[in-house]
Amino acid sequence: MKHSFDEKLSYLFDEIGGVDERMLTEAMEYRSAKRSAKVLRTLTAIACALLVTVTGVSVILTNWRGWFVVDGTDSGPSDGAFPSWSTHTLDALLQNARGEASYMLLSSTSDVTYFGEAYLLWQYEDDGAVYQSRALTGEELGRLCTLIADGKAVGDTSPAQFTRVWLTLGNGDVLTPYLPTTPGNISATVFDYEAELIPSDELISCISDILKP
Image (cartoon, rainbow, N blue to C red; front, side, top):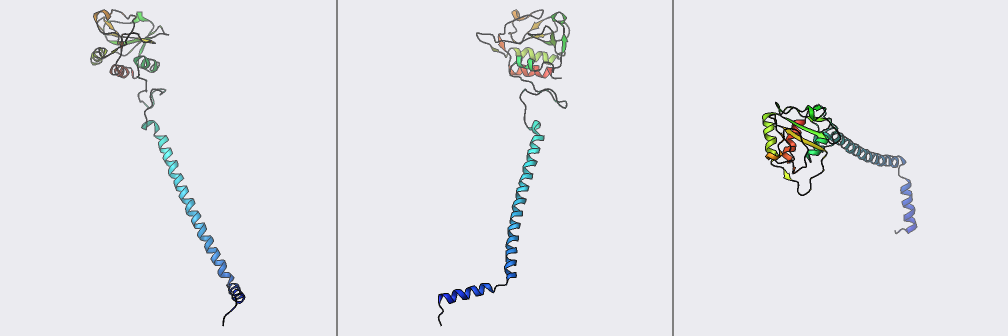
């Protein structure tokens, strides 16, 4: 026997009404539990990612100074390490090392000793005192004298300088890294000059090592 559309619809509603409400409640609770578990897994993943990120940043910040070299802006020695000075030019090195280098302060040029030990001397344009390095070893003195010859010619115009630099040989002779070591550029006392040479990077590095405390 065929049933009409209205009879089929009425039968469907009767069957739906006969479903146990407890079964519907359990189904809804199961669906809610699945959704909560999914949210919990998502939150756990986010928390782990944040933990890894924070840990990585902490490691980078802790080891920053050990991993990267600071160019000439360090305020001074730290934990016994050498200070970081600018070595772009000899003038920059001496300006940067002012107050931090290892030296003896002489009140004026009249206090300079020209016989005995060899020394590196320099003087700032705004200061009448003379800064004297520690006594140079024979190897350091020979290396400095050799490296002076490696300087490049300044060209037509002598560069502006904020320090004057000399090298006393200990035998009464005085040189400067800014002039060729020809007889006319060797003096018996510290002297004024106009730079004819730009000191080489090797010479600047050698002087930097001498001045480090």
